[in-house]
Image (cartoon, rainbow, N blue to C red):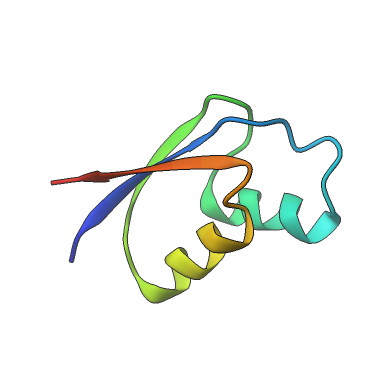
Length: 60
């Protein structure tokens, strides 16, 4: 399965509690933190919910 690199680019201070928990579930704890995960439908759905807070790059 393909992997993606997710980087948090915006602060989560003025976001909803649900968005904060979604970022935590993705493994993003602070700004400019990055995680590399497999691009499963569950992960892609989570990324879609916080797309305005993160950037996504495809990796090999």
